[in-house]
Length: 438
Image 1 (cartoon, rainbow, N blue to C red):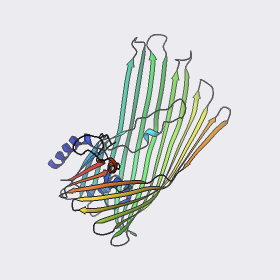
Image 2 (tube, one colour):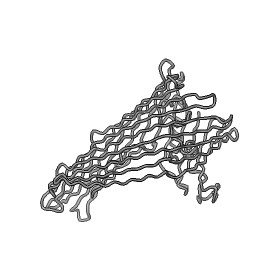
Image 3 (spheres, rainbow, N blue to C red):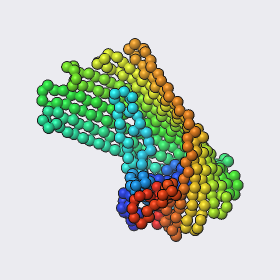
Image 4 (tube, rainbow, N blue to C red):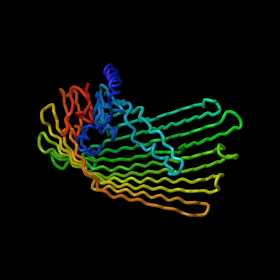
């Protein structure tokens, strides 16, 4: 318990300087989470891996913009029970990775910019008794709130704005040993509930009473994710990792507007819509030990995302025209990753990685329908680009097998140098992560 309390104090002290980076993976060419056979970052792919990392302290020390500043701090701690069957983990302020801030683009005069939630807390629980498959649980809560109220100098006009975004997720994972052709098989289920509200209201205090009220709110939203990851031994030095994943988001929303500011009678508009997103992943990765000191990782995957936004104007007392709009976005990507990690000295590891998009396809279709006279307008935009290659350099520092520091070396360091002792002309590293085993 003393170790846990001490680690929490250290985490709170240093988290203001931290940021989530996954520095080892990024130093190897931005490898996807599922592609590496063993790494502490796997706890975010499947919470079952928290059992592999008891009594650790994570401090993410930044992704710099080159001027020395970093934001979005986060960190966490894990603690194993004495019998080694259970592990608890607590993380604070990890950056949000959901879709809640993407659903309010009407492409009309009304566009709501919803708040992007901030991860308040991630709680892990790992169970490894030996009698059952290793199981992991992760509970995530993210939110952000904003409220503003003001009155004019004359006191005859008041304005009120209220915005909030909340998302709750429950992730359950399991690891099976010796399952069919796999030496290990991971399964994970993610279920979430997203909610958002954005309301702006203005009214005059003195007669005549004029009001303008706009509200965007979600209802009956859900998120569901499924993933599977299998590991097969090809040889003593080479393993094959395969991954399959699917994610689904469905959010119903409503937009309401009423006002008599600009006419003598009230104008009322009511829009109802549905936002859907489906993402799919199919990937394979080879982890091969070239020799006792070098590891090579080769990953290839296919990623597809389909987003659909459909909303109807169900009530319009202003123009007496009812409208319907459909928007569909299809994105296909086939990235290839090559990463090499080599132990230079016992305490120093060097990394280099390459990422290239073999296919980067985007299709955007928008159809606007006037339901009153049944006229339709549709346009489509398509882009097909192989993308550019990205080269990464990284390093790992191991201090007495107790402290592990991973960093991504800033690319233009090789061209204009850096200030190590003083100055912020350019930074030595763009990403730094620290892992402490206590």
